[in-house]
Image 1 (tube, helix red, strand yellow):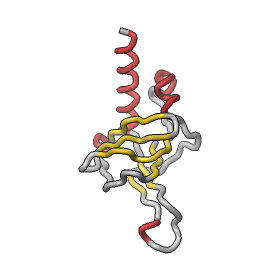
Image 2 (cartoon, one colour; image 1 turned 180 degrees about the vertical axis):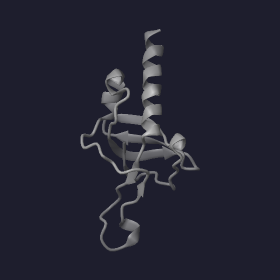
Image 3 (spheres, helix red, strand yellow; image 1 turned 90 degrees about the vertical axis):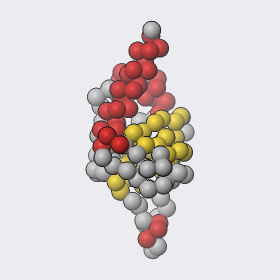
Image 4 (tube, helix red, strand yellow; image 1 turned 30 degrees about the vertical axis):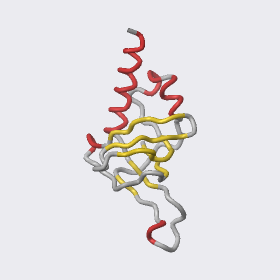
Length: 115
């Protein structure tokens, strides 16, 4: 029963994250070739402090109803661009951007910042 409660809290956190999500591609330097320029999707990122995936899984209650910033790379994504898995040095987490009305082009392997 305790495990089910923790899973529900994590699911709630992911839903909250997806609703307030802003995705920003951070590939390469932004000078010169347009293919190296950063791409932005959604709203501007306002949170300065980066939260690790491990911290979310370890203390899910601490992050409920909070705006947080995650940084990592996309390791798997929906063909339509409506969800992806973000991986940082501590773990992998599912990010659903479909509820926000956003979708992104294929970005597997690219660094992203989400809020």
